Length: 207
Image (tube, rainbow, N blue to C red):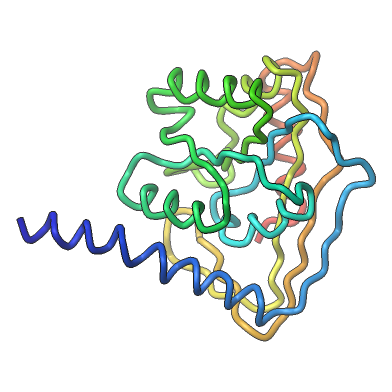
């Protein structure tokens, strides 16, 4: 009973605190956005490493003034907390992993793309291996002929956790440089070539 109470309390309190802290870190830093020359009007797949998740909603807002996106989030307890934080940024979520019971997640992602939602994916999430691209992002993009755009946020000052993904938390009172790649076309590429291309773009500014 006590454990259930503490989990329920965490699910209520931590997302509120987390959203406030994310906003504080964003507002207390200088910002510079580096956007692609072409921003597709049709739904796209946004990709970023799991460690680089924290500030990505703000880069997404540069693409869509009215957000319409869903982010793939783990079904684990920490994923539930992240999902609730995302609601404060007007982003939906799809719960699950493209590598663990992935058929259900892929079906939901494909349906969401057809409904006009952009999809955000951490290709090495939810539990790694770090900096390895899973098949799901390629399947989703190719089946809906959706382009992939790679996101990065590079803080001038940051903490880096000792977690599997080496999660990055920007420090206040520095600068955040946001980068988004030109749209990447995966049509006609085999699975390994497509994954290699996505990884190459993701690694360009990885910490």
